[in-house]
Image 1 (cartoon, rainbow, N blue to C red):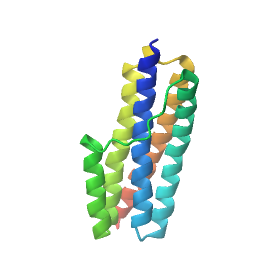
Image 2 (cartoon, helix red, strand yellow):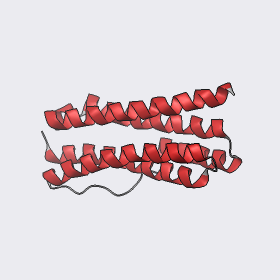
Image 3 (cartoon, rainbow, N blue to C red):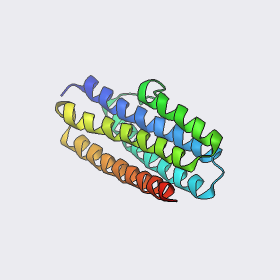
Image 4 (cartoon, rainbow, N blue to C red):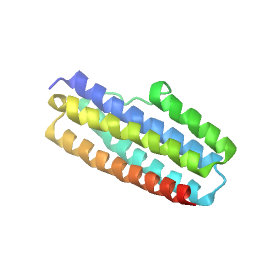
Length: 152
C-alpha cells in the first residue's frame, strides 16, 4: 500500500464531496421553494459528514485534505445545468441536474473501490463503502423527488 496513492484516493473523494457541498449550498440559497431548501441542506450534511471522516483519515496519514472543487468536466456541466434551472425556477430540471451530479459522485466512489483497493486499508475500504451507501441513498432521494415532480 502506497501512502501517496492512498492520500490521492482520499483527496479525490474529498473533492467530490466539496463539489456536492458547494452545489447544494448554492441550490439551497438560490431556490425559492422551502422544501427544496431543506432537502438540499440535508444532502449537504451527507458530504460534510463524509469529508469529516475522510479528513480525519487523511490526518492519520500525515496528508493534507484538499479544500478545492473540481469545476471541470462532468461537474461543470451539472452546475451550469443547475444554474440555468434555478434561474428558470424549473423544479424538474433542478432535480434532474442534481440526479446527474449524484451519479457522478457515486461513480467516483465506485471507481475508488474498484481500482484502488490495493492502496486502501480494510478500515478505509469499509469507510468508503459506508459513504458510498450514503451517497446512493441521497441519489435515490433526488431521483424519487425528480420522478414525483415529473408526474405532476
